[in-house]
Image (cartoon, rainbow, N blue to C red; front, side, top):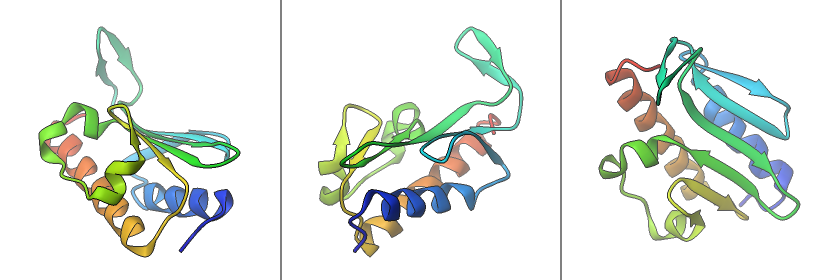
Length: 122
């Protein structure tokens, strides 16, 4: 079980960095954004890569902002443990990371990648 902010952040970063490419990251190690590499329209503006996820380190938890769960809500079913961490529609506040939760997040990221690749945006 990972309980420190540093351990949780490292695990989440590793789960996202495993998908570089088709993702790329920007930002610092405390606050990192992951996006696609294909120029695309995001809303009404053209961007270098479609937003995918962010990791934001806070004093008591790590926030995972995961956009595919917002854009493809029907494609995801999450466990009660992960649902407890969900604040709003796409932000997870993670204070403890069990091996099961870590595996579920990795699978969720993989599914998000597959959905966005199918849509041709990453």
